[in-house]
Length: 362
Ligand SMILES: [Zn+2]
Image 1: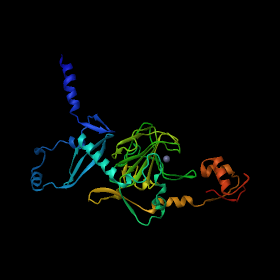
Image 2: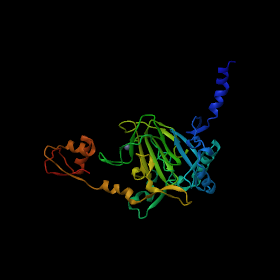
Image 3: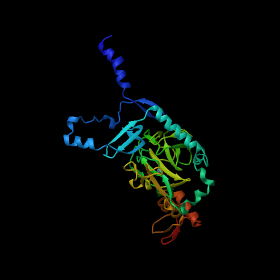
Image 4: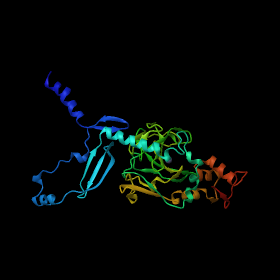
């Protein structure tokens, strides 16, 4: 055996396997990445001036926070333990495969015993809360509901940080999510820890759809996927790969349609998330009941005030030269169908309209 062959067969594999393993999407991959905090070489004593050395002896590092976090580094998912010290240094130790499985198993036990995963749970219905009282009353909520997002602050559902279409009234109907455009096959990830409630095809426009219910009762929707990876009843950790981006259903190009819902009622994800910077808005950074860092979003009736606004009637005063199909297109992006709706609203029998005429368009 020559030397080259020896290196290739024995030394090179040893090198590869010593680079650490990485857990992603339910599988273990060999990875050549070492977390950044571990790559930093400690300063040798020679590099530290003597005065500083004295200070270091005097001052003992104190732990400020110790928590389990997940991090995306170079597009790969890591789980680990982060310790922050009072001198603003930190250490981060990635978990072993065993620890990750344990954490997933704990989430499974938690979800099995929680009411939120047993009541109004359906793997076939989109909106299982239709019979629940709370569903209808969110626009009249009296109190603020503090939603612990149990999050590290990162937001990484879609690789794109550009909002192409936001939550709001669009072409005669409410657009109940945010659209971020990307390429077919781009990775879509779970926003927070939770359990997949629905993974299937939807004829109503969502196409291939994943719905995750989170421990705080929130649900997140991921629509128009080209491929669904997670199955109903799967336990997912924030950042787990759940689907691939696509343009199935009613979509005008490959994009993620992302929704946040509480008791079936959608609200604007951009109330919570700074999509441009791919993180949860800083102002929601808080402490949970155990005194740990987290993000808490206060849901109020304001999140659902759009429902009343949408139900309000709307009128249009006809200008010279305007036709029924002009109005149909203007308000419903559908010349024929839109005009038909307007005609019905105004109980019109003919297509003739005249300047100055006041027509109800919504
Ligand atoms: Zn959309």
